[in-house]
Image (cartoon, rainbow, N blue to C red; front, side):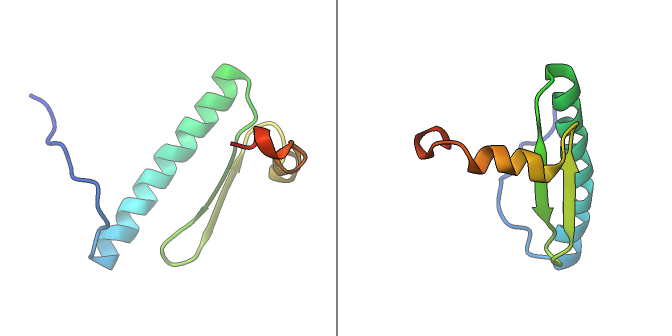
Length: 79
């Protein structure tokens, strides 16, 4: 039996929104880590929670190094 497909929309209840963010943040960080290890890529993840708290993740290199590489790219390669 499959799961019910959720409609993607903003969660109005602030408590539920914070709980959902906390759970999904951990999952997203785990996936970013797996991607960085399995594919040997540089990953930088910066998130701000609904309450304004900062969450950071970077693989082997620091976030500053990864952002520096991005900033130094030609404009047409930034996407």
